[in-house]
Amino acid sequence: MLVAAVLALVAAFLFALASVLQQRAAATVPDEDALKASLVKRLVKQPSWLAGFGLDAAGYFTQAVALAFGTLIVVQPLLVTMLLFALPLGARFAGRRLARRDWMWALILTTGLASFLIIGDPTAGVERGEGRRWLVMLLIIYPVIVALVASATSRRGAIRALLLGAAAGLCYGVTDALTKSVVRGVDDGLDTVVDNWETWLLVITIVSGAFLQQSAYQAGGLRASLPAITGLEPVTGIVLGLVVYQERFRVHSVIGWTLLIGSATTATVGALALARRAGEQEAPTASGSQPPTNMGQARPDGGRRGSIT
Image 1 (cartoon, helix red, strand yellow):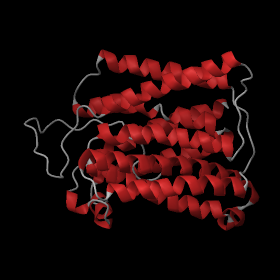
Image 2 (tube, helix red, strand yellow; image 1 turned 60 degrees about the vertical axis):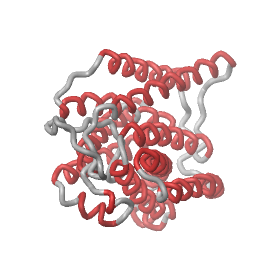
Image 3 (tube, helix red, strand yellow; image 1 turned 45 degrees about the vertical axis):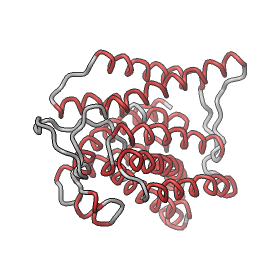
Image 4 (cartoon, one colour; image 1 turned 90 degrees about the vertical axis):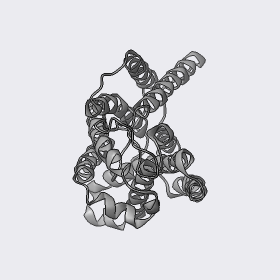
């Protein structure tokens, strides 16, 4: 589990740096390209977005290796630490210093995560999830994603960013769970991986999640989209770990469960606060907002993956 934890932290750093670069690029895309293929065409022409794409790919590979060594209910919470990296990186790009409350929320998040993993002491679960368990969960999750995207098409600004961010977060949670299944099947040979339905569903979910997140970045500020992405991805991944992979917490008392829930709540509060802080000072998007006088200030970020995940 130690190897998985270290690799998850490395992946979180790579995702944070990728998001800083990619969100800044996505914010320049005008509204007429929202939720269209032209959004991608504009982004791939920007060097900063392409650099973020490369870092994103490296982060995803690192995360996949972490899942080969560990469980979803260990790796997923640790990926939230990308906020601990993204906030100072964003501040560096924006030429500002972190406030005292930034460090306070960072400490709260770190304490909550550490307590959650120590108290939970999760078991390994099964190597691959049963098809029927996957079917039940996907029949619940995918219709929600479709409903969120459908609702977002008739909205603008922060509401659209929130809805698309929530859809992206759900996609990323499913992606992480599918990745675990695919990497565990590598030992059986490449032919087995190619023949698995999980592999092809993984490709579809990766592309969908990436497009939805870039669309959320384009639609509005991080204050709207980032909390949804940051909150729903780990929750979705952990639920799939518990239901599909039958991972379990080694907690057998009321006090233990109380402490586990308390630590999870503490980490969630810290994560959402940091996500909001990451979006408090940001440059305007290209979708109709007026530029501020200090055009030299870049937008800080703490977003999640923007290209593949």
